[in-house]
Amino acid sequence: MAKPVPKTFINFDNTEIAFANKSNKELIRTSRLFKLMSNSMLTKLLSSVGLLAVKFNLPFARFAVKQTIYEQFCGGETLLDCQAAIDKLYENNAFTILDYGAEAKSTPEEHDEVKEQIAQSIKIAAANNSVPVVVCKLSGLADNELLERLQNSDAISDADQNAYQKLYDRVDQICQKGNEFGVCIFIDAEESWMQVTIDRIAIEMMSKYNREKVIVYNTYQLYRHDKLAQLKSDYRKSQEEGYLFGVKFVRGAYMDKERSRAEEMGYESPIQKDKSSTDEDYDEAIKFCIENYKTIGSCCATHNEKSSLYQAELIDQLGLDKKHPHLNFSQLYGMSDQITFNLAEVGYNVAKYVVYGPVKEVIPYLIRRAQENTSVTREMGRELKFIQREIKRRKL
Image 1 (tube, rainbow, N blue to C red):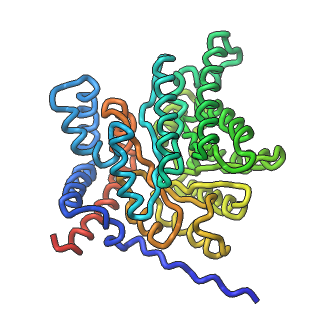
Image 2 (image 1 turned 180 degrees about the horizontal axis):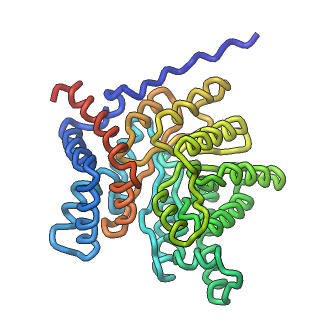
Image 3 (image 1 turned 135 degrees about the vertical axis):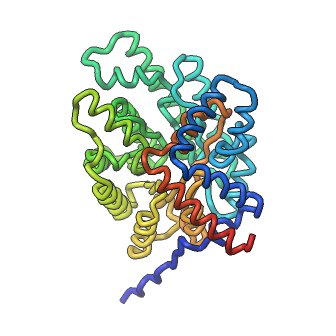
């Protein structure tokens, strides 16, 4: 008779572990920032004014943003700048997912520059056991309007076909380099009106490079009501065609934008009818991927404690190796340390998404962190609660 698998005790309320890598000074500074961000009206105002000021090079704006929101959520302006954050995470048993934060590029020269940045990230990752993954955003490798036209036009012009081929080649070169160096590539999701093209390319890259191990992962946004079914369908395709399936599942970051556009243009919103539907699909995705872990490499990318605990407990219940490379968790750098480091403490594969790039380049990312849909006060309030609890524990 098989011995029962002992249950791993995970306590997300343990702030001593969550903030062990922060000095007293860093903790107090972080507390002040999250207090500011917990005021949604003030956050929206400062985000709009402050980040536009950086964009237009107004005096002192760059310094102010870099010393506050940028420092909290980004690893540095260059790969070299990120090394301190990478090392600090690894000292606390957490890995790094490198993400060059430039988005919405419009010229071929800019797209090639982003491709080279990602290629450099892969080389850095290959030299660091602490960096198993690099992110690839197609919105940085092609014009967003092109991605939209490719999805929604009945007839594709020769110019767009040529531009698509260049995009495809850029992604292929990135995935080829990832395969060469043994570094995983996470292909990020975008808005629904350009996602079909991204999905198609991601699946083709999986078919090409996931023959022996999972190198390429596509991202599935479970706040969309069609994505769980698509995830399962894409998995069946991988089984039929003989390659391993890579999936990062998220809830999603464009909810308000998606609903507004659907209403304005008169089509059915792709977003779930309520949060509970999103949660149900998300946890079903976890269950599906963990139960098929031998042929699916997955990453549970969430700040949701219940979903994180659900995956951890499922791994335990099935008696799986916590360190299996197909079983992963991730959170954004600067957020949800109570999840990241408490999971890491008991031996799970967990990583931080570490965004880097010049302050001006990562403005879209910083705006999303500051104004994450309507949930900003809830998210920031939760972060602040844990930080204040640790300040109290330290008697600061």
